[in-house]
Image 1 (cartoon, rainbow, N blue to C red):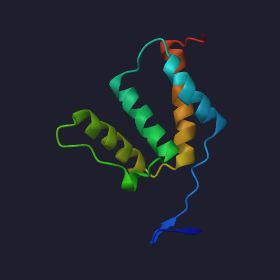
Image 2: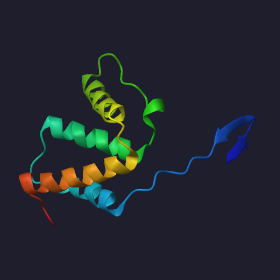
Image 3: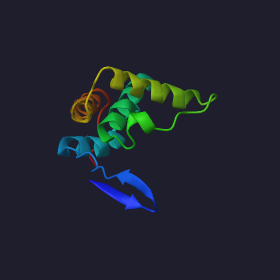
Length: 110
């Protein structure tokens, strides 16, 4: 389906559906008792971005030359993309990872 907007054609793309387990994990990750390691944070970031596809990797903004943290994040996401991980697989893996981090670091249920 296409929409015509002021002389430009845009493809209407529905947002990726998000599983309930993924949505729950996204909320729960903020309640870990200890901050995960940098490597775990990068994995969470990459899986989240691939799982949400907002925006898709191909059109995501690239970090500036001196943005080393942004570069590490985009590299982690690139690795997930290169492995061929789908949005659904990323959501599932994200939920499993958050569950393992809850066991490893503790989880505040308040």
